[in-house]
Amino acid sequence: MEPITGRALILAASAIGAGLAMIAGLGPGIGQGIAAGKGAEAVGRQPEAQGDILRTMLLGQAVAETTGIYSLVIALILLFANPLLGLL
Image (cartoon, rainbow, N blue to C red):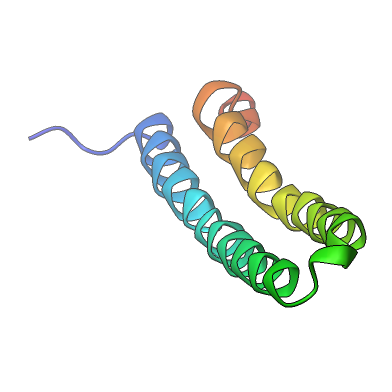
């Protein structure tokens, strides 16, 4: 059995970190689903306010999605452009 090298350890930790970062995508997905459901309920109660409700809901969803995008970017950096490997 070969000893674990520094490179192998960094790659393993980066893969685990990328997986953990992608778990952060669950929050925005759940939040956006709840917001869309509440928006549909609001339009059902007040159809004349559909434009305002839709605009507010989409703005909120765009802000919530940034968290998921940031976690995806971090995961991609850890997997494909790992800056930690340059330290070896």
